[in-house]
Amino acid sequence: MNKISHDSETPARGQQVISACAFIHRSFDGVEKVFLAKRAATKKFLPGVFELPGGHIDFGEEIVAGLTREIREEFVMGVEVGDPYFVFTYTNEIKGSHTIETQYFARFTDPLENIVLHPEDHSSFEWLSYDEVVTRKNEIRPEAYVPHDYADDPEYLGILRGFELLQGKGLNFG
Image: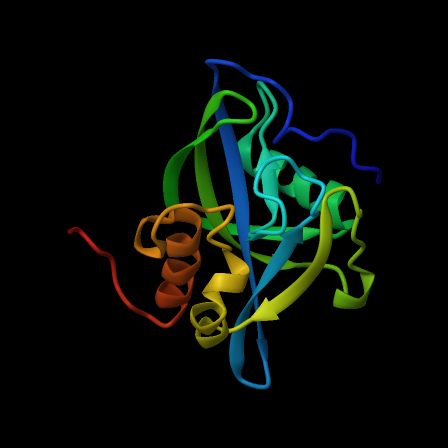
């Protein structure tokens, strides 16, 4: 399937946008890891930043169906989407929009060797453990493109929260 749009850069001045991302996880030799894709350096919004795969949900589209579509478009992979676990908002200055993003647990349903990258979207991908995400946070979420403290970076916090929930750490009400 061909990638048909580049929604992170399509103008949407003053609009509310819905986005969904997948915390695609898998155990490698007993170590739980998450699939992170590195945005292409040519992207106007967050170039070179590692992200959970996903994207914008089309008007009238069911959110899980949209997330499944995005994964298929971006990586030519099927995905089984589980429960949502993290929600946050951000402003995209390139689009001029405000985004509400929901992160879901997920697993690839196709063999990992079938992953395809579209160079206009992503330059690479990695499977990283919790410790690797923490150790490499400067590389994963470069300060040049994510100008706030890591304690305030919602995508980074969502990745950490995904690992915490997989490790059985309970709900947080504070």
